[in-house]
Image (cartoon, rainbow, N blue to C red; front, side, top):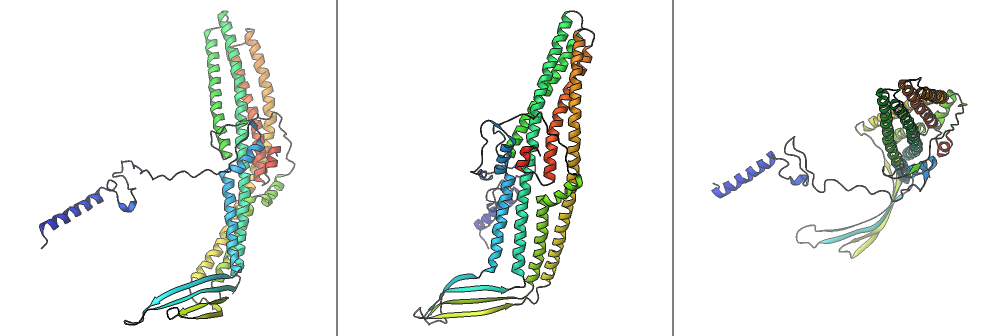
Length: 475
């Protein structure tokens, strides 16, 4: 029988193990390396000191903005150099380039240097023997594999082409995002200037209402309405100002820099080169099918998938190779040696793989069809994108003309309303209504200019022709 001390020790061990199982998270499990979990669903997890890895170091080749106001081309250059999107697709293309080199290594022989040292004893009572085999030099070369190497090389080549086109598409995407954020920022700046003019006009109206009230020809209601209108204009100004700061951070982020990076930009151009788009929408769609990098990348993926079918098919076919080796061979305690030479031709014929190759071929063929459908779907999306952006530009050009006519009429109406109110033949309500219409007309004209620039950028992007030079020319 076990003595009482041993029984007591076993009991304590069992109790401790049950407690650790029942109270997971309070007792650290060595298998979790000190991480653990909370003891109850309502308890928050307390991370250990080493739970969060340190942040990744920032690239040392980031380009900072120069002093002074930045032009659009400078912002685009900074974004293309620093933005993680372009850097990631560039690195992915370089990975694909290295993979292609690795696949093409199959066209070259492989050379190995081998050596082995063994010590053994055949039976009790005999001396141990030492055998040194090598160092031996061996060479192997694949002569023929029914096009497997060629297909693998072509698949890797098409993958590299797709990666390069994807990088081109990333460049155009970044340029578009920069232009959108840039013109949104200029739009907010112009709106802020327009709103400042509105506040000044509302203050003038308030001064006129105060003067008329002090002269006894207007009621306090006129003054209160004028104060309310000025406060509303000030509130709108503060909202636009906050949006301006947000857009400034957006541009900095697109440039691949911290959102708090200080920089300055110019003003929204007053003169808009609103020339008509000479090409018909059908011609632009046909151009997009040719120029869009993402569609070219999708088509390269189709070719890569088609080449992989041949790769899988070749894996189930015979292959022929040659091999040779040479090296010394030491025996009998390393006192005797000889040189071994060998050369030969090898033939590998897969007879049965459990139908694995059949299913692999079927999957590769279906993958090719899937890639084709993805490319066809992308082409349809591109058609719709060009169609939409084309008519968005047409609308933007019409709105630009109409908004300027509206601004001219609203300015004249506000001037007349102010004159009538000062002359005592107009009401404060008429004046504030006219000033509100002028405020809206200013905002509409600014937005129409912004929409034109952004519509041009969107159409260039959707047709696959958006470049740094085109962005600088507003084309």
